[in-house]
Length: 114
Length: 113
Image (cartoon, rainbow over the protein chains, first blue to last red):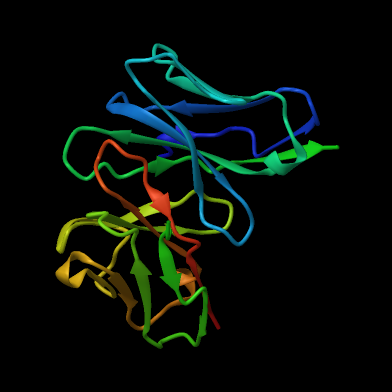
């Protein structure tokens, strides 16, 4: 049972426009969410995160929004650049217990066209 | 700043052979994680170390898998009697504390012939 879902396998946008990547989760115990970017032949690179006590976190061109009641989060990239083309993974974790392991979605391949 | 280092980057072996992977976390990161990623999926948690103690193992980690982290520094993941289904990318991540995001290495890609 997928606890973190990224329902769009791929997304294509024009350079300079906004990219919106979506993520849904089912586990109410998740209280911290992260986005990772992955280029081919490299490991995931941390991008931005948000705690469940917030509904928005911004870092430069990247903003993550969290809607706890809908169990939904989204990553906005504005403006999109060709170098943003990569697979984006949504991940979640629970503070319950002590291991803080991450649960990942299947990823969304973003292609930014020049 | 040295990131998480994994060795080898790619391992090709015949079914039934044993393989061992190594992960060197970022210096002073006491929390170390192993994940496995198969084609079209996100990384899946395998096991977690805090210092030298292995504190959790996923049910994905069958008895053919063993992981160690002697002295709380580097970690090794061994797979005995490899099977076709073991073909995957094995990722290692480390973090200094629960409040910090995990930083990943570039992974070891295992191919079983």
